[in-house]
Amino acid sequence: MKEFFRKFSNKTSELVGSPWSFMGAFNIILLWAITGPIFGFSDTWQLVINTGTTIITFLMVFLIQNTQNRDAKALHLKLDELIRAKAGARNSLVNLENMSDAEIKQFQKEFDELYKTREKHAGLKDGDRWLETQAGGPTRLKTITGKENR
Image 1 (cartoon, one colour):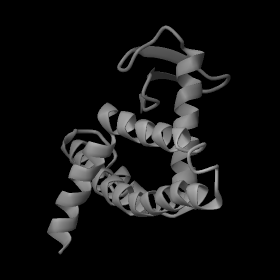
Image 2 (cartoon, helix red, strand yellow):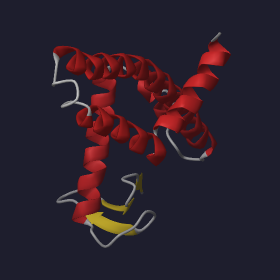
Image 3 (cartoon, helix red, strand yellow):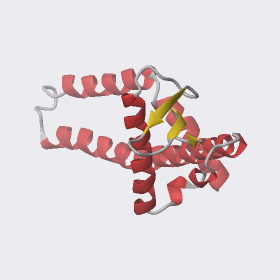
Image 4 (cartoon, one colour):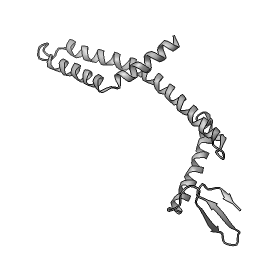
């Protein structure tokens, strides 16, 4: 059942995401609007489009959510593999999507600081180095990645 639903939802997402599907839906609405005067803009005429769109929307939510969940999982696994394979990368980021909000907020602060460092040294790229002297402290060789080298 899961395999059937996976294939069905992927194929349906591809199909309904196409320009042809949009044009088909547009034409159905256009046809419905044109038939309004024929049916005297009756309650039944309005009920047809309301019921049809409600049912389609309700079903599409589940299909699209299934496809999005699957894509997100695949993307996370690919990113996890890149992090794992890259020497010097922080492996603590591998399972980031399952961390608490507080842990994610801490990582966000670290990346905000990194961004500020990049802005401060605007012409530098990853791997570029500069000397930073602190008042009364040692001179440090720093890289744009924010890691310190003494």
